[in-house]
Amino acid sequence: MAAFADRLIEGVRRTGSPLCVGLDPFADKIPSLFGSLRDDASGVLVKFGTSIIDIASKHAAVLKPQLGLYEQFGEMGYASARILTEYAKSKGMLVILDAKRGDIGTTAEGYARATLGPAPGFGADCVTVNPYMGKDTLSPFIAVAQRDQKGVAVLVRTSNPGAGDFQDLQVGGAPLWRRVAEMLSPETLALMGQSGWSSLMAVAGATYPDEARALREAMPNALLLVPGYGAQGASAADAVAGFVKGPKGREGGVVNSSRAVTYPPAARLAGTMGEWRNAVDAAMGAAAKELRAAIAA
Image (cartoon, rainbow, N blue to C red; front, side):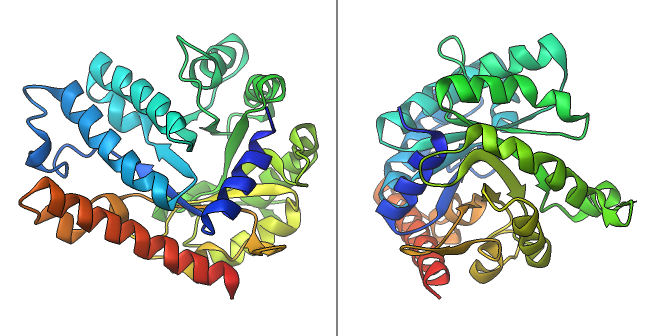
């Protein structure tokens, strides 16, 4: 199997767009067309998720399920997330499991096996991790990624409004997030692919394009996972600020959109499943087109 970074770059080049579709099952947003979450949570989650994946696979190479939103439904939610991970992979998509794990020692090893490992693990292609407990929290994930050609997406400069509370604190004349990026840069070499990109990704919020450019300087080989495009207000140009010129336009990662493409206004008003599919397909198509234009600029 090729390195995760190589598979991601190939997928983005194939679709022509760096769109990553976020799969976030909000209980108050899933249309009643899919049934009642109260009566059949697992059935609704799987039906909604597979329907999203069927459409997403036409527009994007990557799916990002938000594990925390599945865990709220208990064991049925957890099982549904595993089913949807397998289904997305069967449709040719790569899966970044958004789990944001961050612990040390044997606990981190357990998290790595659970998210990246084969059944009973998720078998995801990549997992998000939180490095702010220290560099040793990453080692078990990097070890599994090396062995199984997987990816690890590390939170560096996130898109949420409170990100600066800690990430912007000055450490030796530079913000903490920059020091984290500098610490991670040598680690990217352990997961380098044939494409010249590393399977050690950095999460860089689209809401902070200047920081994304600086992060690219600190981590020249890291693919970026860019949240914040769409519902959080960042533009397509902002979202690809940390990308670099490649053979087919700017490249260097994927841009996630969740609510804007899975719960567009027209879909929420749909009265039939056909109308819902058309609305979601249109929203994903528009996002893919906008990002395609951004990387071509």
